[in-house]
Amino acid sequence: MKNIPNSILTMLAGIALTLVSIWYGQNHGLLPVQASDDAGLVDGLFNTMLTVGTGIFLLVEGAIIVSAIRFRRRKGDNTDGPPIAGNIPLEIVWTAIPVFIVLFLSVYSFDVYRNLGGFDPDAIEATPEVQVAMADTDMATPIVNGQQRKTHSMHHHLALGVGADPQTQGKEPDLSVDVMGLQYAWIFTYPESGVTSGELHIPVNSDVKLTIKAQDVLHAFWLPEFRLKQDAIPGQPAELRFQPKREGEYPIVCAELCGPYHGAMGAKLYVDSQEAYDQWLQSQVVAQKGGDQTVAALTERTDIDRLAPVADQLGITAEALKSLQPAQPAA
Image (cartoon, rainbow, N blue to C red; front, side, top):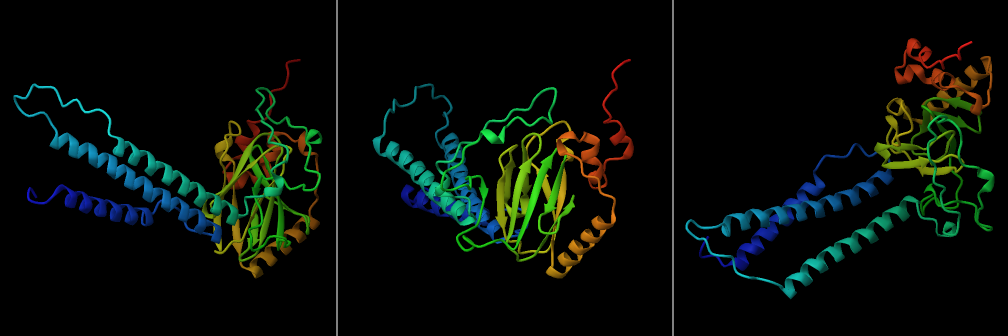
């Protein structure tokens, strides 16, 4: 090793570091399955960032280890170190490399966002989002007044959510579903059939549009296998549009701390074949037509009313529901 020039050793170390970083960045196994084409775009960006991060980590840690060994204090050496200060070429290098990395990742992430359908240049002048806070005593009280919001005079789609990608831009979706987030459940309504359910069923390979709203406080509609997450903001509808490519059952998670029972707020997304979806929808239409439905205003519903339809899915017992009964005032 002593006969090998330092330049050759540095080059070999650089090649090894690059190969290890690329391998780990593509084979980390940290992400769940890809249930849509959009997930592949996000994974590509994530893998690139992980490759870069792995390379930086190995470079920094390797430099520390080599320096600690090679430049350690020798026995009996009590002299000061050499007074080295300033190295213009080195400073240029360690400034230029991060700048290049940040610019590259910025352009790459913007391209991914655009291909997902998240960029809407016509909505730039739309009203900015309203900051919403949770009230201490009445968490279910809407804080935002939608009547006070102004929209663009020529374009009414706010830049909130992931809309149609360049391939489906201008086309009507195959299926539209309204999603309502409320403490502590997701309610799904199919406008064309009038079906309301605590489960979200969609046919595979269809163009699906979700219109997400919040009844009370901030929630976040997260589909990990689809790499999609959208805040649900009171008074401000958001959109998610995607095409499921893989049949199966997937979790729907609330990724925003929305109250004391936030951890129990979840639902299931079922990607069915077209035949299975048609059968499920028809069964829901028949069941809801035959049932005695009582529609109450959402603003008047209690926590028990909201949780009762989905208690079985959330694993909440009848006793736990009764414990949510508000205390009666003393006579």
